[in-house]
Length: 204
Image (cartoon, rainbow, N blue to C red):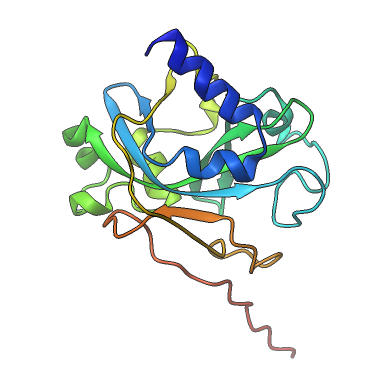
């Protein structure tokens, strides 16, 4: 990727996370020989206004990379079994991030199939945990730069994405109606929306 494209992506990531998120649609995230065209993202603000963000209560050992400079990966472990990949946005210390929710595998598809045996091609990276599995991303890549030579690489769009839609984020219990989920309209790799459902706890 040219230096001009790198600088353009750097400017996007340094800006407000809600503006950066839809601009990442159609971009590519690569690891090794596998590359995914991003089709769905969610924005999470670190400016103290978004209780659904991991940055809401400030930096911790788990989310420290989210408070670093923009253009780095924030990888976290969730539900005791899955990894999720975020691209850090906004200036260092803010803590904004864009969760990569889904995408289309466009290179290294045989490798992705081996990592996700039995999955249909459209489902290989259709959801944040599936995306990281298809890319072989885990906590070892937390804090990695994505705009420099390294294991993870973010590349710009090569074609227009068409219509971009937005709506509530999937499965969040706080600020559930904020429309900070963005996706490419009618793309088959976009994951289904699921609203958070509180668990019923029966007292004994």
